[in-house]
Length: 332
Image (tube, rainbow, N blue to C red; front, side, top):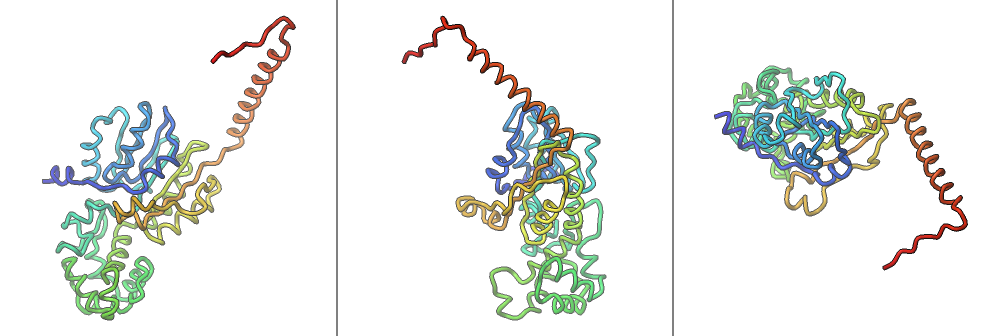
């Protein structure tokens, strides 16, 4: 059963063209995909050069199993895996030419009912990306105090009716399934809001998922650590899907003393991709580059000086030709 689910883990990566173009893949280099998901970005990186290596990370065992199948022809010569939270990864001295992360929940996680990420299916309130550890959404919904619930829904869901929803949850709990919770939330908000562009439970479910998986705290820690894993001149690119993530990426890139920001404004999907993959409409890609240290700058300066000296010597050779030498004539 698990093998079948892994094989069905088919996720369409967003902003692939822009990511690969900005990453500027180099041969004989090592790259890190910190959220391999369905393996789309990992596959694109590996396809650029024959003699590079990639480490793929994901918290979801189902994702890792699926990518091992999808990219079997690269494994283990060019591709290796590490399962866990990217904020807990330790490269053990490895330095990467490029690091990427595609944040948020993937399409297969939403589509597999028993994961509990979506209210489109009746399922247990789970929402864990790594089902071997951590608290579930049910534990939060059924045991947190009303004030704590309201704060969570407001801060992580940016939900204007957070206090009203929290009160309704406390009054009607325990909740066992995703649809029970979604229906209770829908009955709480005003009718106009109930029939809006998105389902009224969307922001609450987002808040619960973020808390269950500690997504924002993990992202902050990851961005603080990852620049130390880059070679001087190496790049890091992160794709986010909502304002809370994008704000963290923007500010942490800007404030990190090891990084130079490449993208002053986020890169967004082109119209053709938005039409083909609606999920890409909310995606934002930001890039930063590891600064050169003093030793690296000295090396680059010396290399530039050697190159200039070599060019000067060549020019001198051409300049001091004997009078009898004749210029070459190029014939069409």
